[in-house]
Figure (cartoon, rainbow, N blue to C red):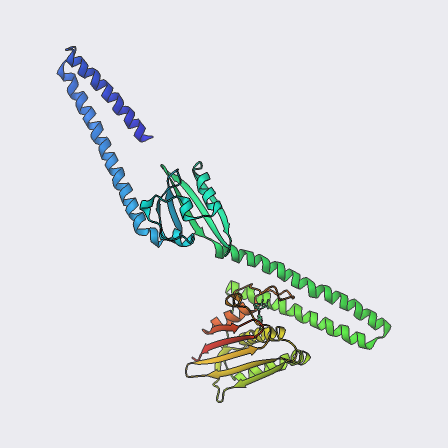
Length: 395
Ligand code: ADP
């Protein structure tokens, strides 16, 4: 706008300069007229040259700044001309798009840097839009990119941000609520049916049925209690409302309590619980109730994923710096693909598993271990059981 105004002014000045010059040549005018006209013209040109110089200096410093910072940015960036040639890009773009290094001299096109049709189409359609934005989903592995563009003079600036973590968390959160409401509905429906059956068996005076349905109702209420406890734990962890209460405890007391708690279910599945505690095991400073929750989650998983007549081993050992809890089962195990994710919140191993669970038990265990400045790891293969290793520093 400013440039075209100046050009128009210069054109008018040149025109009037030419007229005066031809007047002088035709001796229609005196030299007096041409001198101020010439100086006016000279000033205008000098002014414009200074403006252009300032503009160049500014663009140069912006470009220098961009060149210095472009590879420290978390987002992929590229400048394209309107024929989809890449004029400039940063390293992050290469790693985001899994392309090999490009050399700028080769006049690469967008199609050289990615084969993803959505990204190519986005760039092409952005040429006719001042600004553009889209979420693009990539497969194998699934990733989500937020891609934005802006027209800057004769170039198209394209910025790509990896938003996979954000979108995945949002998805798993939604799945968690869907699963949790499903999980709540199942024991409630079952409880209602069992109560009706209980009432009928009372009317008929059938004592053995009465006991049977009473036991079923107890199971349903236990399940409801577990779900509500998990929801409360998740809420406490998410909102940072966790109150930690460290106390010195004797590990054998805790293990005995757990053994007692699980004895009915262990007996019903004929699973042996073998535990060993290294001699002179020191008293440990932990939040007992939290730590119990962690071990309860691990033991109930071990029971759930083990066949009848199997066994579960718990070894408690220590050295000068740490205490170690190794819990091993010999159940269905976890594949290499799923193993790295089992401590992630809401992660569930599907397929083989028929029951639906919330996928938060192990993430709660990890949070509890973290609170104790400890470390948790897992080793497993399909059908070879699972080994959970917990390390807690002695303080
Ligand atoms: P959930 O509350 O759904 O059981 P967890 O966080 O406890 O979720 O477990 C995450 C996933 O790891 C589950 O999908 C479960 O199938 C698997 N898993 C946990 N413990 C075991 C185990 N001992 N053996 C085999 N799979 C297990």
